[in-house]
Length: 314
Image (tube, rainbow, N blue to C red; front, top):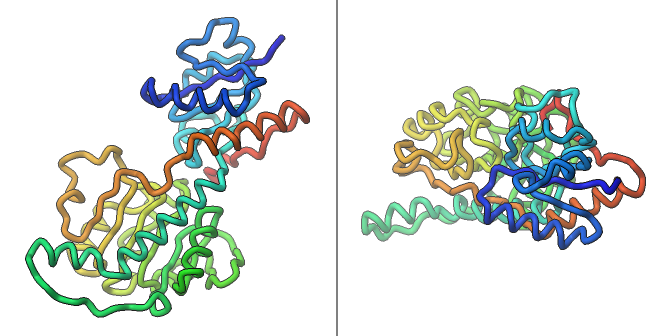
């Protein structure tokens, strides 16, 4: 019986069709069908599901499912909706995504280091004032999360001349990074950073990790970049820290609700830059290549790729 791969997404038809075409091109020997067009026989023969924002109930129609491959690096929705002792879930680990994220971290760090928010406000007010220049070597960037994305971003920042500190849940060693861990380590890292970048996955432990206490621990006038997930940062606490001047600016690419509702105070706040979740978009072709390698290894060896730990949330 020929095994089938089923694509399950909650994406618009055109976007799903693009993923399906890229996956088919990367795995010409495989039969890949979209769930919405699959026959009962195809569902019965499906052993691998490739998913992006799926309806959890849809996975229940695949009785022979061996493992689930996420099309995205973030897996918090799958962790929240699937049983921890159920089908293994494999997150996307794509070097291109790490490169894109590191690029975004460097770009928006420059945005803050070179006082672009101040110049934007000056333009609106028709004010001609030169801000005092700060060298990268005089700017400490603290990275909350030293995983694959955080490590790549740290290297990019170091190459650009910034001082880099970092925090992780457990001890880590990265060349050129003043790495800290644990509760006390987070407080120390926040206190020495001019710009704080959030790159942790969303888990039970990181939800509201950056809250009122975290903002109080930061340097007065420090700035924040959140490229992780919206709930990692306590939104109301952030607004208060911005209004009080404890923080000078926040670059936000992720939010509790997306798209960001029109009545959100973030839209019009003078100390906030709103981005529409664009810091590290999935590259459809490199993602398909990574998934093709995972599938080929499974077909050859029967070994399911490394899956997420539901107790950790990633």
